[in-house]
Length: 175
Length: 369
Image (cartoon, rainbow over all chains, first blue to last red; front, side):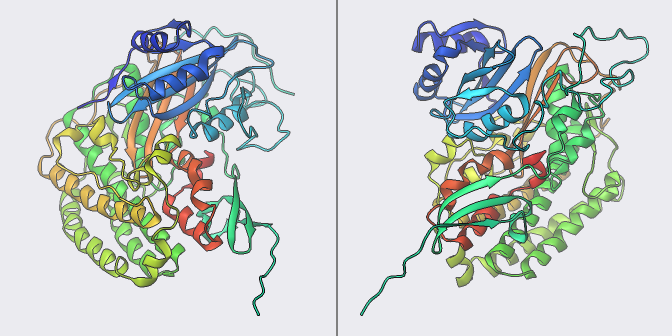
């Protein structure tokens, strides 16, 4: 028996039923929650017998140039189901989303990692620090404007013969 | 006349360079006398920025990186990554490819658990003898890997759409011989340790974790199953045709270090069972589908996961139709299993902290990536 993966609309319906007005939008894959209602909705999704998402399987951030997405993969052992929940952070300079550590203790390390590598602040996290890099490290490595090679992305890795170059905003090196 | 010794809390470092930390990992333990009252983890000494590097390389070029995260279970890591990309790009795998993947992943689990069990006994004070016994068996498995793909540790054997090479003709007799001898070794190891008074005293009721705490702390793998939660992705969400094989999920009852150890030993028996069935029913046909080297999966995202030796190993990949992943995220089981380290160590002695860390079976390459 395979795990039942909830489409975004089903997660959105459950979230809307539990906490009205919590859903921002839903895509086929994921349900986007409003940041101000995130913790409340997550707590409800965890305890509700129908959703029963007791296990925060994975938490990570993704940089989309103009905004960040924090992706939560939730699963239920009893019901054997899986859902993807996302939340967006639009302020690039002071990106922040509420912390879900009060709901799942397992978010503690994963939020620290997302903060360390992407610079997303998790408001309400009990001890947010740079878990892999050291304090004072310049920049946030997993952001798209941080380059691991000083010269920037060069042709070769990003291009194949006969294929169009990806349209991307101009890249700049971090100081 | 009685007198009490007044102690003051002070901080001691376990690691970074310490044999019990299995790599470069540090616990800042605050101790009051012999009791640990606070434990803080310091990691990142081995950070190689794998997720960033992967964004600049093609999907196929990323496979060797996955070897080097958890360097004790490279086959499982390859498999998890390939499953995620296959899910994203909608690529199927032939039956023979799936069966070979299962055989290799289970051999890798055996090799990794040999290391885990051996190193754990080392931490409990059974200095060097059991670890050498376990290594003897692990060497035989690595010999099979070398025979198949030329490498012992960083195998780089799985490919998107199948496996890199078909099995050599020497593999089947070698694998059958090994599979016949392994249960004897597991019984021997169990008989040697499970009734050993010192081993029991060192591991029983050490690092006890309740199932509720284990689930809430996002644990997975033998650490979760040791707490009595029967959750195994091979059963719950079968991949590579695991549903065809007959095996059980061993669970513990106490949630202590001993249960995590015994769950690993029992899992080795189950792995042997799976390999026997897979070798018997190995289908013919091609071992891989043809996949373009410059793979460009459609825009979207996929979360592929396998039950690695240490727990749920997930790969979250976002594609923007480019030749390389837009975002490549690893869900490292060792890293997340450390979420409950503080709960397990606080209240015990410093020597128990070493045992707890050994029972979680961390690989620092995977924690830091």
